[in-house]
Length: 356
Image: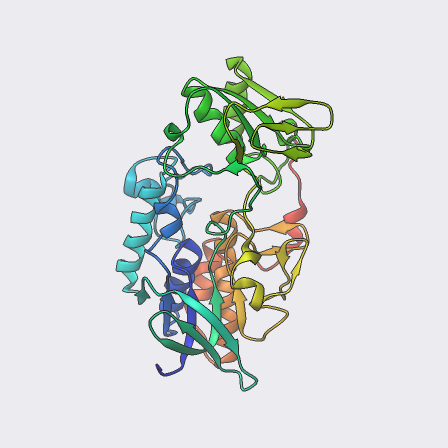
C-alpha cells in the first residue's frame, strides 16, 4: 500500500490532466490513475468525429483556444486544424502530460473507493491500493453509454454501417453527426426525438445544437435523404420502431444516439444524483463525502452546465484553490488562471442570453 498522497485524480482525459497540470503549477503532489490510455475516450472516437467547438490560435491576444486545458497551449496551433479529431486530441493531452511531467499511471482500473471516517480515502485498483486526502473524480461519461434494447451504437467508423435506410433514436449532437455521415455515405435516415433540438436556437449549446451541428442540419435538409420526426419512440424492436403516430419498418437495427449516464459507474458511490447529475457544493465537492471533487462534463450548478471543455476548465482552479486552502497553502497560479479566463466562480453570469 502506497503512502497517502495529497491528491489522487481518477481519469486521464482533459478534465483529469487539466486539473493535474494546475496542481503541478501549485506544487501540490498528485497522481492520475487511468484505466486505459491517456485520452482513452478520444482514442475510441469514430475516425470521422471532430470537435464541435472550434479550436483557434489566439493566445497571443488573450483569446485562449476553446479546446485547450491550460492557458498557454493550443490544439489548433499544434495540429493547424480548427476541429481536431479524437486521435489528434489524445496527442495534445500527451503533450501536456510530458510538458508538466505529470505522474500518470495508465492501465490501472479503480475497482472500489472507500471514504473513511478519519478523512482517508482508499482506492483499491487492479494493481495496487492507493490512499489520499483529496480525490478528484474525472472519470467522464463516454465509457457509460445509455442502453436501449434492440439498438446498436457506433464503433470505429460510420463506414461500418451498410448503405440503406436507417432510423436514429436521438437528435442531439451525436444523432445529427450519425445522420450526416450516413447520408454522405449514401443512406437515407430518419431521426426521432420528441424534443426536436433541430428546431431550437439557444445561446447555450449545452442545451441545444452547436452552430457546427446546425450546418449539418442544413445539409441534411437540403439532401432530401433525411426525415426529422418530433415524436417519442414508444416501442423499439428488432423489426420496427413505433412513435406516437407512425410505424417504421427497420431495414437495419435502430441506432442509439441518446447519450451517456455516468451514474452507471463508480461515480454512483461517490455522489448523490438529482435529475441525472451529481449534487455538488459551490466548490464542486460531493454533497455525500468531504474532500471528493468532480471535474468534467457532468458538473452542473442550477442552469449552468459545464459540459464543454471551455466551460469545465474554468472550474479546475475552483477545486485547486479549495484544496490549497485546506492544506494551508497558497499559489500565484490561481490568480494567473483567473487572469486567463480559467476561473469562473460567479455563476450569475451564466444565465445571460444573447440579444441578437
